[in-house]
Length: 569
Image (cartoon, rainbow, N blue to C red; front, side, top):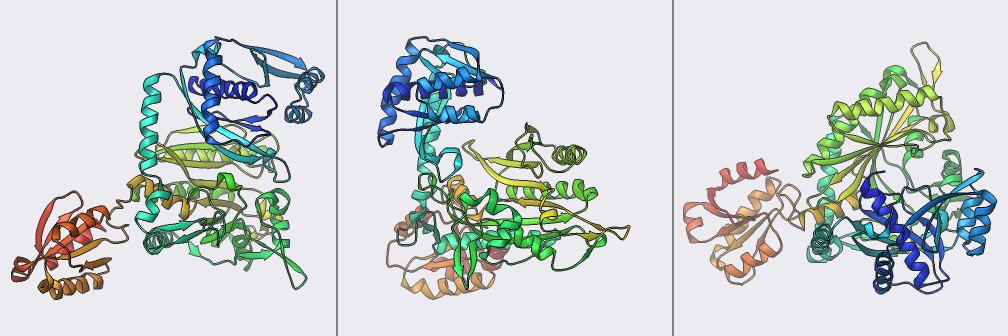
C-alpha cells in the first residue's frame, strides 16, 4: 500500500473513532478500499445525518489528532474477537467475523477505539496533517437492499496544508463546472423530475443533439472496425435472466418482475444476454469468427436515492455495449484492437491521460488456471502494445474472467471510469453457444464484453464538466450563430444560414431587434464556437465577418468559410 493510501486508510479509522465519540450508539459498517487520497466509512445512526453534521465530526477528528494517539496492532483468537465486538455491541463487525474462517483475527486499536483491519496504518494520529470531509451518501449493508441503509461518509486526506488548499481550489472549480447546474443554462437535460421518477433523464434539445452527434460518430467508427449493430428489447422473460445468472447474483440491482399473460418479465439491467442470443440465432464456423455485435442499449438498474447524481449516476441509461465472440487464440488481437478503438474514441473528445487497471483471478473462479494465466497475460500484452502503464488489482476480477478498466483524467486531474473490457469464460456455457472449429467439432467461444464510453449519459456529464459548456466545434449543439446588424441585413443572413445548413452545419440566425453588442454578449454567454456578423460591408463584398469563441476575427467569402468550417469538423 502506498504512503498516500496508508494515510487515507488511517484517516478513515480516525473518522470512525470520531463518529463513535460524537454519536455513541453508532453501528460501524465497513471502510473503503484505499484509493489516492480518498476514503469513506459506512455507519448506521439513530439520527438523520446531514452535511451540516460533518463540521462536528471534523471538529472531533481534530481533537483526537491533538491527543497524539498511537495505532496498535494485535491478533485475537476468533472467539475473543467476537467477544470484544459483542461487548461494544457492534453487530456488523460480529457479522463480518462470522464470515471469517481464520482462527486468528487482525485488530487495530487507537485510544479506546478498536476495529477489524489488516492495516497498515500510520504510527500516530499526529501524522495526519490535513483532511476534509466531503459528503454523505447512502448504501445498503453488504449491498443488499433487504438489509439496513447505512450512511457513507466520504473524505480526503492530505500530507500538507498546501495540498489541501490546492484541492479546495479544485473543488471550487468543480462546483462551477457541475453538469447539473450547467444543464439548465445550456438546455441539455432534465434528470429526476418527480413526475417521471428519480434517476431517470430526459434529453432536452441541445443535449439530444450532442448525444446524436456522439452516436453517429460511434456508429461510423464501429462499422469501420468490423462491428455489426443489433437492437434488443427493453424487457425480457425472467427465464433469460435466470439462465444468464443475473437473477441469482444481480437481483438486488434489478427491478421487480411484471406479470404479463401469466409470464414474468423484467426490465433489462444489461445487454449481454440479448447479444448472446443473437449469436445463437445461427450456427457459426471458426471461419466466421470473430463476430462483433454492438448496440446502444438502454438498461435499467436500481440505485439508492442517496447515490443518484445528475447524469453521472442514473437508474436508466444507455451503454455503448459490444460483445465479441472469438476463439481463444484470437483474444490477443481482439484486445489490442479494442484498446486501440477505445483510445481513438477518447482522444477524439480531447482526453489523452489515462490510468489502466487489470483485475486478476479471484479465489473462486471458473475455467482452468492455464486459461486464466494466458488471458491475464493477453491483457498485459495488449496494454503494453499501446505503451500504456497499468496497475494490478489482485484478485478483483469477476469469477468468470479478468478485465481491463481504463480511467480518463480530465483537465482538473479528476479520474473517471470509462472503458471496461471483460473476458468471459462462463456465459457461452450457460447459454450453450458454440461454433464448429477447424476439426469439425463444436467448441464454445470466448466472449469479450466491452463498453468504451461506459454510458452516454455519464460520458456526456463528464464532457459538460470538462468543457464547462464550451463544446468543441464538431460537438457543439449550435455550431454557428449569424448576427445581422439591422433589419436590412436579414435576407442575406438567412441565405447564408440556408447555404450552411445544406452543408450539414448546425446554424441559427439571431434576428432579435437588439444592438449588435448585446447579440455578441449573448453568443459569448451561450459559448457559440463561431459567430458570423452580417452588415453593409459583408453584403457589398459578399463576405462574412467571423468572430471565434476566443475573440479572434476573420473575414472570408462563403466558399472559403465552408472549407474552413469543414476542417474543424
